[in-house]
Each structure stands twice: as structure tokens, then as C-alpha cells.
Image (cartoon, rainbow, N blue to C red; front, side, top):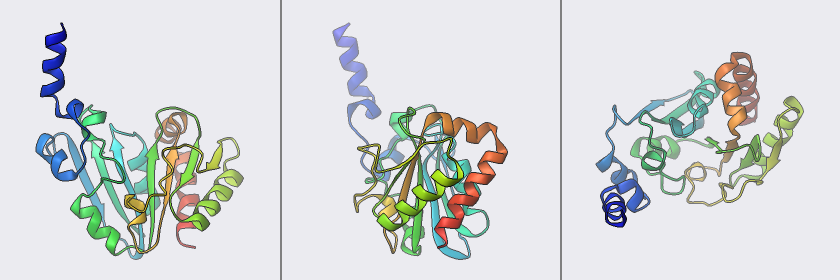
Amino acid sequence: MKILLLILFICSPALAQKISSFKELSKIKKEGKDFEIKTRVGSVDSLVMAIHGGTIESGTTELADAIADDKFSFYSFTGLADDYHGLHLTSTDFDEPRLSALSQNAKNCLSLHGLKGDEADFCVGGANAQMRQAYVRALALTFPKWRSCELCCPPNSGTSMKNVVNRCKLPGVQIEMGQSLRHELQVNPSFLKALSKVLQSELVK
């Protein structure tokens, strides 16, 4: 049994070591089969991204798409295969070229993520303190049922300047959403629309 477990560990890239670049990920995962990438260039120099969409952190791509609409630029790395660890490239390591190109031309950036549990409904992070606080106020006011807080889900604070959301022209905002909230987004179109409008309005200020 010990020998079998050792063989499985060595043969699985996802288990053997953390994936630290898109180049590494693309060697073991195939675009169009294991994941897909969607991009759209908007008319306003702001970018909304979901780098862990689909099977990785469900509901994030749908919300990012709704926020961006036909106004902001949009990026989604969407998991198709059921392999969280094999597809989860961290925000500080995420260097997919198409996102890098969009980020260089974006002034304000918003990145959406999903928590595994419900330790918070909206955990607002990122290196842009002014935008962070504005989002917390707007979310708490509009959605009092859901708990909004600032920098409240370490280590997912998103404050590192290596984080992809902070590589735009200005530091950005990262919002981690609880599992129950993300489920509500996927079954309640009215909630998805209302939340996207609130997040959209703060992005243009």
C-alpha cells in the first residue's frame, strides 16, 4: 500500500508540486478540454476578471461577465475538468499572456474569487484601500443580509503587488465570495443582476 501511494504521488503533477506558472499548467492541461479562456475588450479602461471560473470557483465567471457587460474588458479562465488543484494557479503566479495584455491597458481592475466555505459572504481585499472601503460600504448597504468585510479572510487578502489584480495601472480590488452566496448567484438571476450593477457602479468612480 505504501509503495502504491508513493507511485501515485510521483506520477501526479498536481499532487507532486504546486503549479507556479501558466506554462507549467499548459503542459499538463489542454485548453478546450480541461479549461477555456474568454476575453473581451470594453470601451472603458477597466477590467473585470475571474481567473478561477467554472469548476474551480463556480459562479465567478458568470458574475464577472455580468459586471463587464459591454462596457468593461472581461477575462475568464474557466475550469472544465473537475480538478481543482490541477487548474488552480494562484493569483500571484497567474501569468497567462492574454490576461497580462489586458491588464497593461486597464486603469482599474476587479478580480472575483470563491471561498470554500462561508467564513464571509463578501471578503473585500486588494491593494487599493480606497476602492476596498467603497466596495464594503456599497455591499453592506445594498445587501445587508450578506456579511461584507475588509481584509477578513487571510491569507486571501489580495494585497501583494504580485497579485494579478494589482498589476494594472492602479492597484485593484479582489473580492472573495462565500459558497452560499455563489450558489445564490447561479440560481437567482435577479440577485446576479443586482450585484453586478453595484459592483459595476463602484468600478467607474
